[in-house]
Image 1 (tube, rainbow, N blue to C red):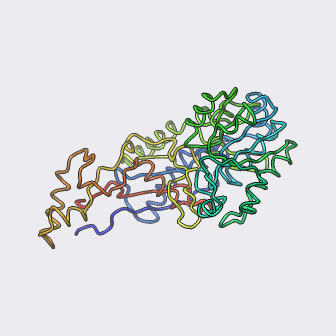
Image 2: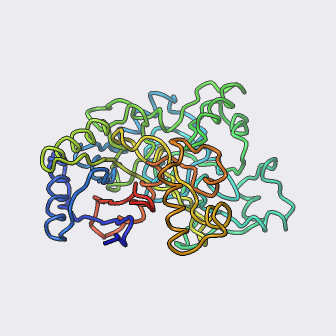
Image 3: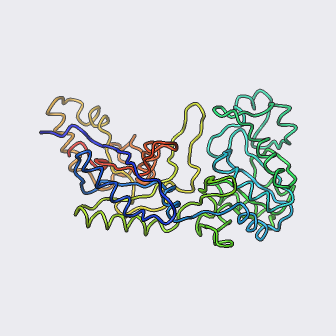
Length: 396
């Protein structure tokens, strides 16, 4: 009988993970139990994905705002610091800003506008046009911004991030000054010591700032790259990808993810005889049509994955073949022609017309986005995602 189901995605429940837990065994046990209870067979090229949050929790990769403040003072001098291009997030950035402000006497906070890097809007683009403001050139003080646009409120939460961040800085005993600009070099008119807090554009921002005369130019990936007083760290990403844990603690992005995924794959192979791909995933990449946020607050979608997940999809567009190469066929004849085409397709379709319209993204980014949507960020309790049939095609 012909199989009628293609890709199947299951969110798997797991215990609440604590520091020191044997997460490798927990993941393997969850997969085996789910397979037995739901009566599905494990197959080669299945994918098991684990959210970065529980990997970091098991590793105990936490740091306090005091430890972050100490690192900020040591690396940026503890006086006036320019903090530029942060995202607007209570979970992602506010807790980090506490530690940064605690390590300085004054923070000049420069916000990008009309939105932050991941799509949280301070104002609608149309309002810039109405007021004759050019966001590529115009630099606004907080007073000018609020005179033009009033208090900014987030679409869903209603948060006024501008004043929330200002008050947070002042609560930590630092002076706060807020400006709005999109050229990173503007901050050098206020201070030569800069922390650029953008995620995916940080390399460019650092390059421009250094070339323009910045004395000390760091990114979030340069803070807590080693342990401060026994706290957590991430050698590669620093505090990028961190989340609020408590009012004075942040959970950092996990370390040694390649070692973790390879160990899980090995244990699954011993238990099942199957080669199952394994990855750790964080934020996916998808845009909310109303709130406009892109997610993507982590430095990468997947900080670790097994070798079978390397590369990009090599797929043809069925509707293109049906409308072009085989437009004169229908029914079983059409099905067989397309199936034969797929069986004989090149190993690397590249820019082939038959591949146009397929998603040109890395496998780990696609699968990570699928997993992020499946597990969610709330109380689903499914930090493990099991995927079957992802690498199938029409002929399987």
